[in-house]
Image 1 (cartoon, helix red, strand yellow):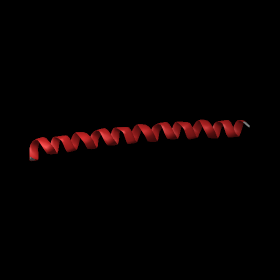
Image 2: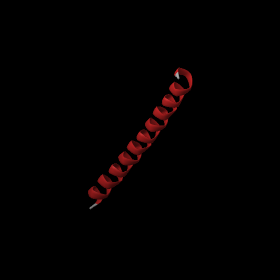
Image 3: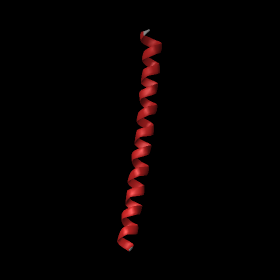
Image 4: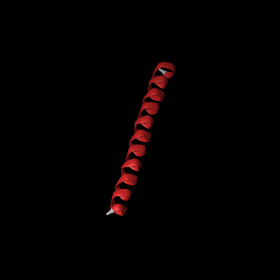
Length: 41
């Protein structure tokens, strides 16, 4: 049982890190696209 709990905790931590990475990736991409629209059009 303790092993399952540790696995779940590790999985939740991995998922939280992944979602944070994806959120920042989307934000950076949007900022780059806005910058391109302002300076190149």
